[in-house]
Length: 175
Image (cartoon, rainbow, N blue to C red):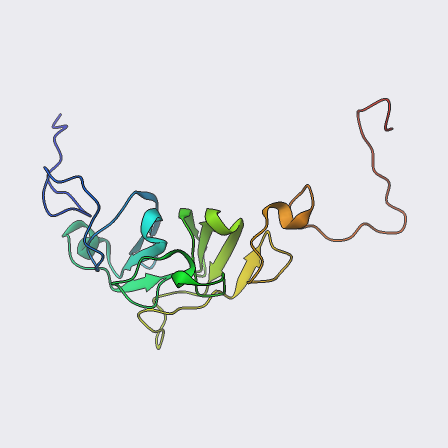
């Protein structure tokens, strides 16, 4: 079994390990990767560049081609958390994990902003190459501009309790 890599992505060669060129091929601390098997596209969480890069095909990704889509930044040459400003629907701060659903929506764990963002299919027709805005947010009470941990409470977003609901605890002091 061959255990030697055949290609390196995110750096110009196998020897370099320094911070990348901020462009459509460089990466700085990539963490999560998601493959949409039915659409055949690939996404990489380029964590320290506060962006997600997308390739329209697995072959273009594996071939080392430049990314076709950038999420979280205004362009391929930017890397500031939240684009140098406040959190919003089209910004990211240290994205970490990724997932896709059967509708080709992309879910991004935006750890620096304490939230998960949902982006409509980034490779749908008429979608811009950059500046893509999320369609939903989890972990911030539905607001794209909040960044506090736990939405100011001690648990993730949840519907308010019904009038007949009771909190049941295993703690004998608190009930």
